[in-house]
Image 1 (cartoon, rainbow, N blue to C red):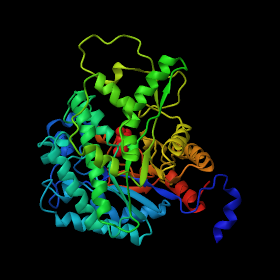
Image 2: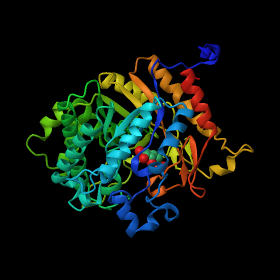
Image 3: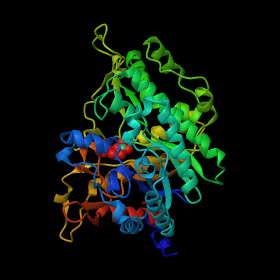
Image 4: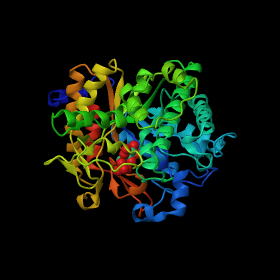
Length: 471
Ligand code: BGP
């Protein structure tokens, strides 16, 4: 009741029961990479052969030590206002050989995490795959292999059976387009393949694996539990209203948003995208029955990761004949003059885009329930903002969140079915090849000092927001 006195200060009030929290992932936080029966994922393997690909040579072996410090961390989640938290199970920990025996030590660990969250009144949201293919599965072809699709579905079903009595919110994949882009198109991640047709096969098999996991989930009838997927949406904006620019933006949108969003919600691939891939002769192989599984298993709930828009203009130079196909043959990226940018990450900051996404889901996806499952700002060198009391004053992060939340609030007022906001991320963690360069956390992690945790100013502020259900 004491909250009443603050009611007048709340200009942006959110619906009752709104999810306040953050997202993280197993590989980026747990550490303990070769402890208690876990086997390598592609990240551990890649780091072992090419450590220089990782910022300052920091690899995934310890990340943020959540494996050992989860109790303290969950307490800090409470202190930073969380009523919900997403992390992911590592396939390589739970079923170290990809298929077959379940690792009891992993079961114990995830049970302890889930139970601790629930005991602390924090709703656990569980994701099953966060770019982290077990190396033994990559050796079988990774997402290019149907055998791996089946192995994943078995792993997913195992998770639902083991933890589905307590976990009510499940997600099959986080940002499944990222492995397509980073590992099969743009040479950013292992296995460094640059081949659109193979990337398209990876995309199709991932969507198939997702739909089959949803099917397995539904068969278990887990009461009111929900299943969804987390997609990173990057709305495409044309340089101008010139029809060629508009067309270019539409094509980019087909590749980078609708490619995953449409099959998981509407059960079918966008027709314009199919036409383009057919024309370029890069359609992936679709086996009999695939499209039925996809059609019959739409999600209950969508997670939207939003970081930045995509700006596009019509292609300026023709592509030389015979160049292997890439989406950028059909549009050029556009650098908008005067855009606001996060210099540490090089990503544009454009808050109102979050509202455009909300309205798009409201109007074109049957007002499907969704939540903002990631949004955040990575900053390098935050230690310089430490105050005499010893905590980092990250006012820029508070402003970043606040400005996005204003647009979320507007979308809600206009009827979008948004159930919550999760920040990326709870504590500073390992950002793939960027390692610990850019820090995103509400809580600082001092890797030089036994992974000491210290709540930043944003963490204190976030607690107020959650308590007042607004700001
Ligand atoms: C998202 C990923 C996260 C996280 C975040 C920050 O796309 O889902 O795992 O890493 O981006 O990006 P980065 O780590 O590249 O700075």
